Image (cartoon, rainbow, N blue to C red; front, side, top):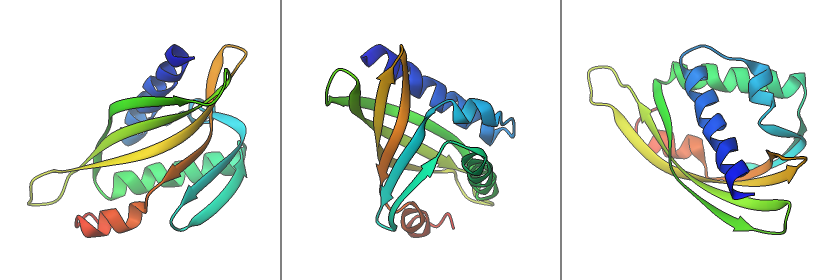
Length: 143
């Protein structure tokens, strides 16, 4: 399971990089996620389906990241907490780098905890828990 989860997040990081470059393949984005998912943050809990609505939301999110100057999203570390033979929590430590006009780039470290399921040889994200991204970006002067 560990190898397939690491491959999943290598793809995740690569897809994010492509999206920041403006080269988005929404089918590739959708392939990272299970058919249904749950997400939680200090703003609340939501559920969703891996459908056209998810693709539209992700396209908007990637456009927003580019608009606020997101230059890079890089994984620093992945630590797994196994639940059973098909499920784990992937604790992913990210570093986001932002370009700001007339100032130095800003790097922000943050963690997201992804629920991952591995079935039929492939790992997919079926949920995640994150902090308050907007508050962190405001605090660091990005937005």
